[in-house]
Length: 146
Image 1 (cartoon, one colour):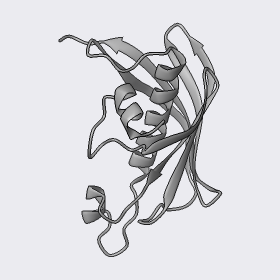
Image 2 (image 1 turned 90 degrees about the vertical axis):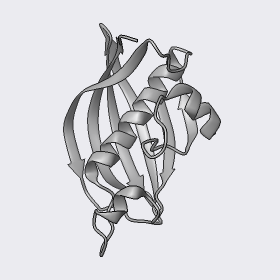
Image 3 (image 1 turned 135 degrees about the vertical axis):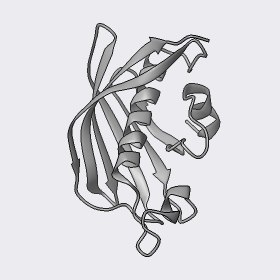
Image 4 (image 1 turned 135 degrees about the horizontal axis):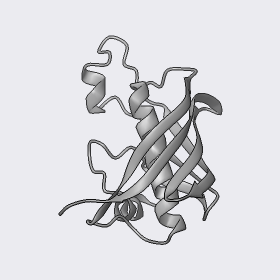
């Protein structure tokens, strides 16, 4: 999936869209994509100017966006105005190494189960083949008032 296809499946936009491309997808199973981390990211202005590091919560958000793409592609539809895909829980979050400008953050989401509208994913983020973060992420789709 290129960026245009990603934009059809996620409601996020700059500066909060944290996936640049999807390189692997198996419906109902897994998705692999990446985020090119550049020095021009707005969060580097304050986190931390002398030693820029991608905030851990944004690594988690990037993994959560990968789960959204996996779920929407699995049910074969894009984001719609009447509902949003919400994060409902994060378990077992671990951070192993910092992510810095120039890194390519590889995002992997594996569907563990989907039951009664709750999707559970095992997620990992890596740079240069080394895991930098992992988490179990739970999400659900919910209708919203328009």
